[in-house]
Image (cartoon, rainbow, N blue to C red; front, side, top):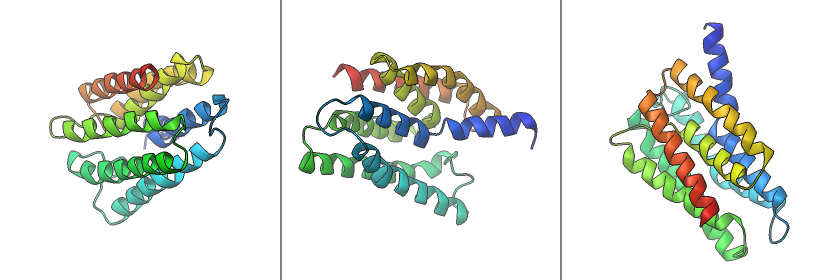
Length: 191
């Protein structure tokens, strides 16, 4: 593995959707002055979304059903979307039952809609979820004036580069992920 490839792998790990979504939720939770802020939203996302998706990734790679943990081939993606969407919908249900005033509900609906759209588009394009979720988080956090968002904006081009170097996506797939991520971020803040 060359140094360029190693750097691209590192950037891809640092910009993984698990990282960018956790940063988004943590930053929003810290800014939340009323309702249910704090560690609960982070715990909810980790337990109901990240852990199940992470376990799926581990098992699919271990059993040889996926070529890598990123579900880089389009036929690997349906189960990824199913597990992620199940976690998001379970989170929404939990929040509606236990904390109907939570700031997280609207955002989770936007993420659910985004996942459905990405799953539908997979028939024609395997958009970059790394770039999409980094763009979503950066957009939301910039729109609310968080320095974390501006930092993520600086990370997105290097993430774009890393996904190309690793041959995980085409420029078109990265661009579609970027556009949909930004649009989802605007929808999360503006609605």
